[in-house]
Image (cartoon, rainbow, N blue to C red):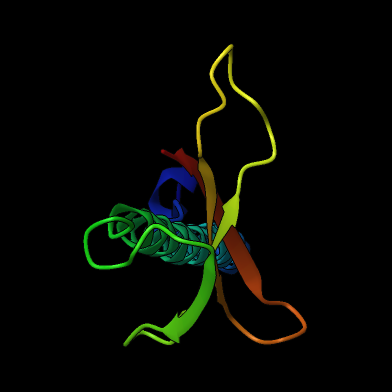
Length: 125
């Protein structure tokens, strides 16, 4: 008999184990990356909603909310709490002393200890 008739066909057990180990490690890294991306997208979505809410609150000043010194609080349907403050602006602008107001919208969400906050301010005349 020649040695050609006893040639090995297929993979050895060691080769199969190494291939499965590499596959498991690669899949683990991919799953961790996808999970991290999902968390990042969720946080970005929360910040986007908070910014939109703050902008819409400030846009209501002078339309549905009178432009006068006040403080208003509320909550959105998605569980975000907000506070809108209208204060007299203490800075003088130019030669003319115009009556202006500092409007600040603060939106908070999340748990008390690790909650997030978005603040937007604007001057109104």
